Length: 283
Ligand code: 13P
Ligand code: ZN
Ligand code: NA
Image (cartoon, rainbow, N blue to C red; front, side, top):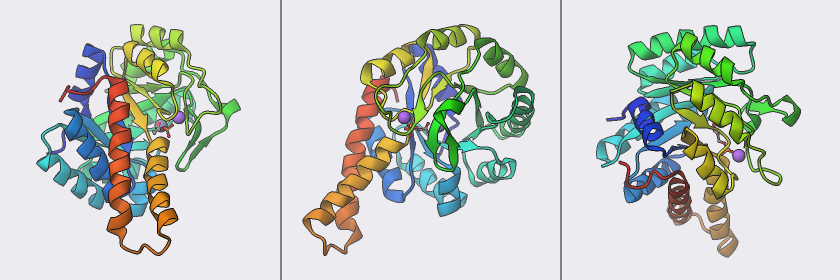
């Protein structure tokens, strides 16, 4: 069965590696990253955005992830990414999600605390992991758009107060990464990660995982980032593999003929991210 990500991530933080959370949008994407996790003998988190929940249905996603978890030899958690809608969070927990993110980071601190604590209360009762965000991660993630000048780093003292008051299991502090592919290199505030990690003992979550150079990922992980979210790069790899099939054969009309190479490309990309995060062999 699907497991909660809480113990998976605590273990990762304790041992200095990160579990990769992959945003998936189709059955083949889900299968591709699960195959990668099996091959890498790594724990894994499957994530869906609010947009994908609306597109596929929480029940379909939870059912597919549940089958994967039942068959797999590695621990698999299912997480709802960046959600500000309380009703949808409840719906996903009912459907079988084992982890949820309440993203009220666009609200003032006190409102963020109140909304997060409310989700933490119901999620804990269901044995479901809760992630929340402090500061604002820049860039575009599905329906959430944060302009570069609106991005806001998390304050370490706020992080400590926030975790204490909300009881969240995992915290995503904005530290300079952004959703999407960076123009140039991300400007990560490593000193801030260190100060946050010193005050907060819950596993920290690194958003905006696509496009972060290898050395920077490793440094973030060594400082306490125990979960890395990857979305954009997977979509690109998957779509590019499909485009390549059609470029070579524009008449192709058997979905298996383009989904199989796409799944294979995804699997390779996913293993590479796991390698960066040090979670290979940790299942
Ligand atoms: P990327 O699209 O940059 O990989 O960010 C993923 C993410 O943070 C999902 O929540
Ligand atoms: Zn994110
Ligand atoms: Na990114």
